[in-house]
Amino acid sequence: MKGIQRETEIIEEERQGNAGRHLRALMKNRWIRYALVVAVILALLLIAAHLIKNSRFKTYEITELEGGNTGAFQYCGIEGDVLRYGTENARLTGEDGSVLWNVSYSMQAPALARCGSTVVLYDKNGTSVVICGREGQIGSFSTDMPILKAETAAQGATAAILEDSSDTWIRYYDPQGEVIASFKTAMDSTGYPLDIGLSEDGLLMAVSFLKYEDGRPKTELNFYNFGSAGQIQVDNQVSSFSYDNLLIPEVVYLDEDTCAAFREDGFTLFGGGQIPEEQKKITVEQEIVSIFHDASHIGLVLENGQGSSGFILELYGKDGELLFQKELDYGYQGIEIESGQILLYNRTGFCVYSQAGVEKFRGELNGVMIQQMSGIGRSRFLLVTEEGLYRIQLK
Image: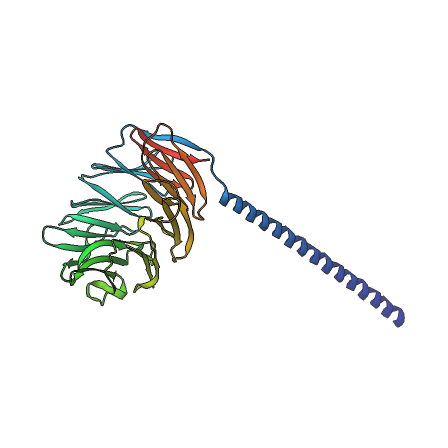
């Protein structure tokens, strides 16, 4: 009986072993099939991405948004919506044509700066300031001196360069006009402020100052911190950089940390958190014709002295890495980057490049004289003519 029982146990063990091996084989085959399916899907996605990246739009659809004379207004695309502003009011319109908000004011020469969906409207050489967000007006106030330049942060805090007949000041306001910080500038000490940049969160400010030493120009770039790191510093200044025989006419914060300072011969990137430091310096030999940027990219159009075309188009990431460089044979009057696409336009047509340098579209607008174009989303553009306001959708 014991022999029969042991034989039965052996048979059962062999059966279970065979079943286990069969199960493992099935699982192995299943994982192989799964891996093959995943590999095929990934390959198809890569092929589709390549085709999309290198595909061209063939035509466009144009839709009228607003008829009549547009000469009294300026227009700006803001995250898919359209901002119209003039001397008496500003109005934000959604993609479906609905009015999201309308703000009244009185300005002689309205100018605009934006940070994401937040905009500051200010009266250039006047004293009025109006700050608006996606839902409407955030705040408004008047300054005690004429405004040369203003910038805003995402929450509506606003920095401004102010100047009267004898003094120039840098002032930093909350959205209701309360002064957060203020300091006077002078040519013989700090220098004359050329430009001002404000980080997205409003904690960091960069100011480019022009100075002269022994009759030669010099730029001093100062950084101010309105958080804890700047509280123990004079005028909240946490770092400073000097550049002899060099002008820095424009400074801009791309995000909360990255600042780009545009020189006559390129640009310098600053980062490092609470106390900004030089991160990367890009130098070009050709003359810079145009500068454009968004939160992730910096673009340059350069003279092309030796090439067959008139310009060289370069695009960099915000880390300073060159994404592409190519000859540009398109005569343009305006250029910008929006939603990963570079838009160039002139009086009669426009051209669109991808952020990889692929020309996606080039065409003429028959019977239309373009005053302004602006990106309002992926492959969608705002067109301003003397006859009205239109939306263009590439197809």
